[in-house]
Length: 150
Image (cartoon, rainbow, N blue to C red; front, side):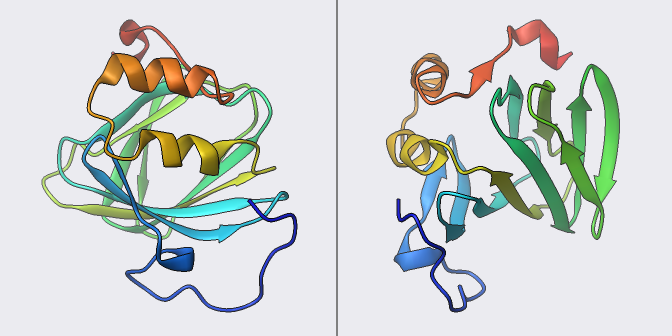
């Protein structure tokens, strides 16, 4: 990861420096990468989700661009639709779920970037959810037990 934010445009449907990740079937595109912030686009098909987890050292935001997401945010279910911004302070448990019948596209960003780019590089095409949880914990992303998703 570079220390400085590079100027320029990351085009629609592309990732910064041509990179994409497949995270448990969801396509992620990095959009901006530097020490201060990390932005990425997610594309979630119906039924896809990221279980409840905590970032102990990062603020996280989601701007829903298309579709809608159901979120478990600090133990409560909320719904974010296209145009909505979700704010998730550090240390707050959260997970997102596409419970709709349409794809959802969203822009996520975290501050500071921490180890997320390195984590996504390691999770790319990793198919075993237990290994995803283990590797994530080594990169400051802590998943809660499965009952937290209910």
